[in-house]
Image (cartoon, rainbow, N blue to C red; front, side, top):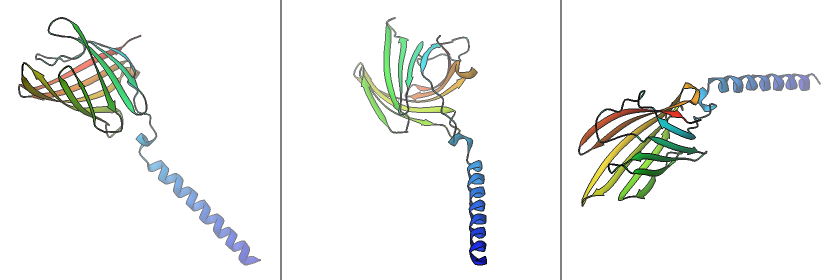
Length: 177
């Protein structure tokens, strides 16, 4: 009988030790494992006063219409073309880092979207090829999307490179009401 009691105590002690070990291990996991990723959903209007656009051919969109779900980020960018006409371009990014290709208006774009290491920003890498007046051009773009002011602002830092040079900008957008 004493052997059975000792065995039960030993098992209880081992179970308690294992339970403590599991909780300690869980406490050492990075907080990002449990934190929700930012949700960029909304209508965003460019705030030129807060933005650092600079000179050049790469102009940020005046408006972003963004829809985000667990697997995709869909962005409709509205900008004014050289002819003064409003243009809309839709892009869909896979949030699992898989490559997506979209085509339209003599342009083909291949993109990937990945969360930053800390999970607070989304990094979108794109390569576009387009044809204008019989010539094909390639533009590479990296955008880093970050929410600020408790989700009231979206900052998009961009780096563009093409045969015409490199260009950096920071576009700050205010969330529509």
